[in-house]
Length: 118
Length: 110
Image (cartoon, rainbow over the protein chains, first blue to last red):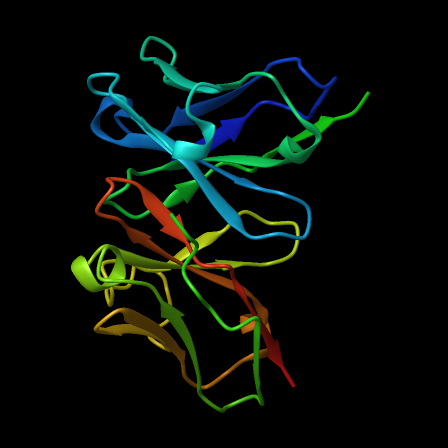
């Protein structure tokens, strides 16, 4: 069955970077895009962007341009999301999901809590 | 891109029907059929309930249905059950080739 398994919780200092992984199993990794969505405590969902696993093309939310990079490793069926220059308002649960901006997110990872604190 | 507009909360009694609205613009909901709805229980990842405005993924109850009129999409849940109590989010593709979510609606089953 399709599963997306994310890396564990992270605690980072302001200004640092975090890299979250998302390992996909149960389907052909290159045939679907991977999107990233975050959710601040008690808040709604925020789309961060997506990556085409097939060709590596990316599309990021405008408010994260320059701070976020999404990549994939097809040899291990793993997607990565790196966020740099972390601020306190980046504290959130980060989800990966199978899908792209024009397709539904039909499978989700379990979420990774990123805490930013000095 | 501003978030789509959803009511903060809705409620209904078991067995009743409720509808959650999701209002956008002609640059998102009004312009495309890429509207999805997600259910999220506390502490859990979102679950896809409706996609492409009105299609249901395999395994999702037919008590859930979706529609769209102009710039507003709607999710209707009929025959409310206690397990339907959750947060619901709409999403839409946009003319900027991005995706936008609604602010979320908390459904309370009385």
